[in-house]
Amino acid sequence: MKLTAEHHALYRTTKSFVENDINPHVAEWERAGTWPAHEVLKKMGDLGLLGITKPTQYGGMGLDYSYQVLFAQALGNCQCGGVPMGIGVQTDMATPALARFGSNELRKEYLEPAIKGEQVVSIAVSEAGAGSDVAGIKSTARRDGGDYVINGSKMWITNGTQSDWACTLVNTSDGKPHLNKSLIIVPLDAKGVERKTKLDKLGMRSSDTAMIFFDNVRVPARNLIGQEGMGFTYQMLQFQEERLFGAASGIDGLFNVISETIAYTGQRQAFGQSILDNQSVHFRLAELRTEVESLKALVYQTTEEYLSGQQSPLQIAMLASMCKLKIGRVSREVTDACLQYWGGQGYMWDNAVARAYRDTRLVSIGGGADEIMLGIICKAMGILPSKKQAAAAKAAREARDA
Ligand SMILES: Cc1cc2nc3c(=O)[nH]c(=O)nc-3n(C[C@H](O)[C@H](O)[C@H](O)COP(=O)(O)OP(=O)(O)OC[C@H]3O[C@@H](n4cnc5c(N)ncnc54)[C@H](O)[C@@H]3O)c2cc1C
Image (cartoon, rainbow, N blue to C red):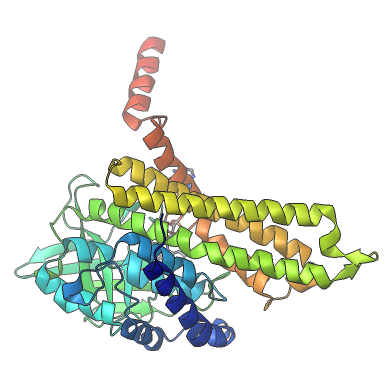
């Protein structure tokens, strides 16, 4: 990925926003268990940072995804994971499908205010009974005249207590699970929407995470994104940007954890030398740095392949899944090893490495667990046993044994 002066300028603007407008408040927001999403996103919208890849007619910059990667990377300088996650929901998780498939009217009504930072948004896919198995969701939207009537509930929704609307995946018919779903914009002030107070989490403490209940919620049929029945497909496409964003936004944070550990272990003395001077420590830090550099190279390569349009959608899904898998694994490795070198200080709640250790643990679970990424990679490699093959083999075995 060739970085231009514009890429560097965007990176610097975002990083300076993080340093001046986010980091001074992180400790307070972490303690409060929430962040002022409307206030922060409005400032970011004023800087044009929420619509980098979005169409210009709705207030976006219309740039290619490489710029979004630099934006995400700069956000990784936040001293917590919760706030970048909330921002990523706004830019890369709840709005790509609307930007790509929504009607002009819908984009004017919902995308434009999200880009301006006037509205806070959520993506509502997961349910208490279906997280990894997206096809297994139970929430429904039935047509009634000019409306959809929505029933069901959503679990672990980021920005959920503050958002103005949620891009919501629901079943719109009883057909096959990959063909019966739709994405619908649900305004969260609608009658029948109830949000349970934020969930208490291991990490990402400053991000608000809610359960949302829908009890006969009426939404105009025009709030449907694209075609009815295409929601699963749209969501799978939307996940690709989510996964690339997730990987890119983790890179700088890991570099920072390593640098802070070098600084700390360099001055901390034990047995007549600094902790860093033990070969097992500095070699390990060098290995970790190599891992993060490799992850960065993979994210840049995936972005380049995505933009080239030369690869099949499955190949791009494979590369994006590799990025997501790798950031989860590398984050666990880096934060665990570095926390160890901080000793007792690393075990303190407010320690930066301890926070990174807690926050990044989500990466291997949320937005598709590691095992789901491995399944996608295996499928692209042609080594995932298909359910049909397994059923046919079982039937053959049973016939033989009968
Ligand atoms: C802090 C937080 C924020 C979130 N934000 C959002 C949000 O904004 N919107 C949203 O829709 N969702 C959100 N989620 C939900 C998240 O995407 C799901 O938790 C995730 O997809 C995993 O689903 P699950 O929890 O139901 O785990 P399950 O599906 O129950 O899986 C449990 C574990 O089983 C293993 N597993 C699952 N399937 C397989 C398999 N096929 N093979 C082998 N092992 C497997 C994995 O290790 C997995 O972690 C959030 C979750 C958290 C914790």
